[in-house]
Length: 183
Image (tube, rainbow, N blue to C red; front, side, top):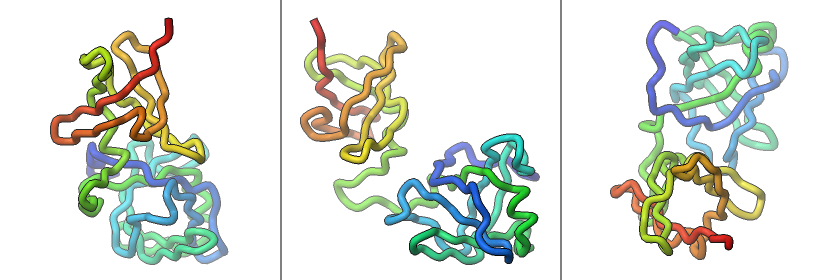
C-alpha cells in the first residue's frame, strides 16, 4: 500500500469467493441488513491468509458498484482501474473488508455503534469501581455479547441488555455493568 491505512479501521465483513467471471466479489458482511457500504466508498482490504496477494499492510480500493440481495455483490477499483476478471479476484481472496470509522454516519439519538464500545472502561456497579475494559463484541443470535477484559486479564462475557448493562456513556468512556459475582 502506497500510503498507510487509517488507524481507526472497523471490520465490516470478509470475502472468500468471487462472483461470476467479470471481476465481481461476493462479500459476507457482519450486518448486511444495515450496511454503510455504498458506491464510491473507500474500503481497505486485508489478507485473511497467505493465499491472498494483497499486502499484509492492507490496500485501499473504491467500490464502483454494490448490490444487496440474497448475496452482497461488489465491483471495486484501485487507483481508478476497475477489476474486471475472475483471475484477479481469485488471487486477492480471502480478505477482510474494513472502513474508516470516520465514514460512518452519525448514530441516531440514543443509538451507538458497537465498535465504539471497544476499549471503554467497565464500572462494576455493585463494587462502584473500574474493573476492566470492553475487549470485543459478538452476537450469539439472541443477544449482542460484550466481552470484558478484567484488570487481572480474565475475560468475562455478558449479554448487552439493560439488566446487565444499565448505562453506556461514550463521552465519559465508561460502561456501567452488573457483573455476576460467585462465592
